[in-house]
Length: 242
Image (tube, rainbow, N blue to C red; front, side):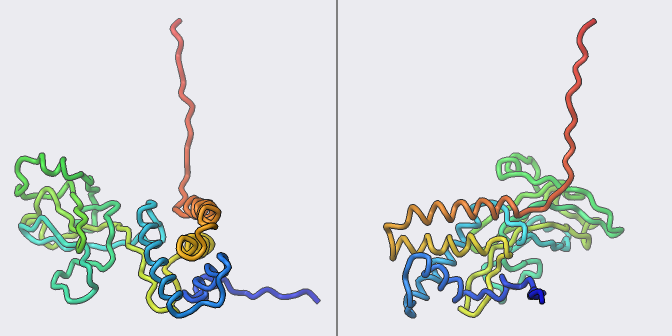
């Protein structure tokens, strides 16, 4: 009689923080693990997640939200460093950057907005001019992320919205029984990455070896992550002089 399969695909969500830590310590040959070593590993895992934020866009952290425009208000807070206690109704906890945005009128018709940098915004001669926004400027502070619109919404635009896609920060590790805020594709490189971080403290002679393994698995995960779309290649045609 043939063996049956499990019928489930939830291994990544059943893989708790303490199991990831145990896997990483096993890779550097350190068992059993003490309470202090668990604390050290959890801190290293949080640091590694922050470092992943510098590696580029993580598509599983892309989300959508809208801002309701206010007459005469150009700047809106996208994120504050705490999830509660804020008086700004537009703030969304965990925003890292805005990817793209559109102006949406009362008929739900969208007009794309152009993202500009600080220098381009600074060069605008009259930043208080009112009208339908056409551009936006994102500022990323330590405790918040803001978006500044140009033109500034007036009475005709008040009540309409800016709909935007944004990338969130990877959630903190938290309790040892938690699952991680990463998809299954990143479980292998998460374990090898934590092993590399821990090797720097407990097995320095293996640091270079584990770093190579970690970078290799991370690059494969980053290459697999994303949103596929159709690509079209058209050859360039030349017409010789006759």
